Image: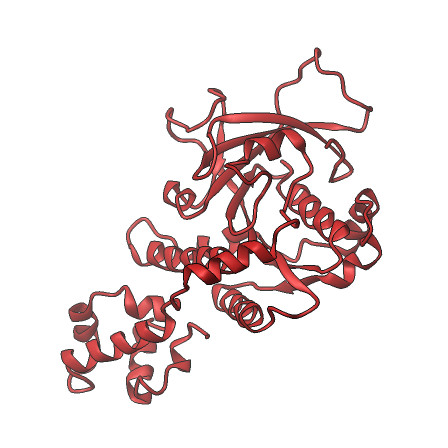
Amino acid sequence: MSHDLASFSPPIPTALLEHLAAINIRSAPDLIFSDTETLLRGLPRGITTLSELKTCIARVIALVAAEGVSADQLYKAEVSAEGEQVMSGISELDDLLGGGLGGVGNGRVIEVSSDSGGGKTAFALHVVMRHLSLHENAAALWIDTTSDLSPERLTRVLPRQPGPAASTVLDRLHISQAFDLDAAYAIVDDLRATLSTSSEAPLQPRIMVIDMITSLLGPHLSAVSSQGHATMTTFMRGLRDIAHTYGLSILVLNASTAVRSSTVPSVFANRVRKPALGPSFTFLTDATIWFARPPDDASLASPAADHERRVAEIVRSRVSRSKLWCEFWIRDGAIVHS
């Protein structure tokens, strides 16, 4: 279901919708997380009562709230993905992410962050291409928020992922563009509808990538208002719900920002960048991976002159130990060490 308030008429009267839009209340999170009495004071006198407004909000909450899921459904989702565990193919990183499952895992939302060019998109492409190459019944959804994913990059990465299903990978990788949160909600809602009705379909979505989540949530955040934080929390809780319910692996790629504090949750004391969107965003995911270019180390020889060394650090994780790290290599925008 769309989170645009215009889709909630009824139960919200058309006249009330127009006045809510006039005070910049246009989405379900805007309405739900606003103080009701303050909201009423911002509306024209006589347009509604406090009781009627609370009733409208309660109806909207009932419509957008995630449906309950039984333990039996969760078990079936886990069993259906047995043998198709999503792995990075970087053995050291898969071990660090383990938590009893190994690899990226099914049913998780993982934040992947780095400075520009640090390797987050290369990693996400590697995970997607590798999984689709190995499993002919798996599909993936890539939500591009910046128009940076080029066909040339896909065709450059694919040949490095040999597997029994490699010939049909591009047919099973679905790319959608979303330049604002409303468009992203529409795509995610469509995916949820597909997952809830296609348990017997020949192709099963197994991975979703949002590249980058920063472009969708960053414009809503403000140092002087909690509304943006509420919007971020609502969206991320929806992602975790769909991941946990249907055994979907979700990678959210996050940009970086400068470190302004000496207390950075990192094993590397001299780190000068950190994931964007604030410290609370990290706790809305199941794990956070940070990629970085390490200082030159003459003791670690590159496999070839065009290989670039990277460090992957588990900044925080619900399912494994944090502050652990490993190394890998990138060549021409693709991971080559596994």
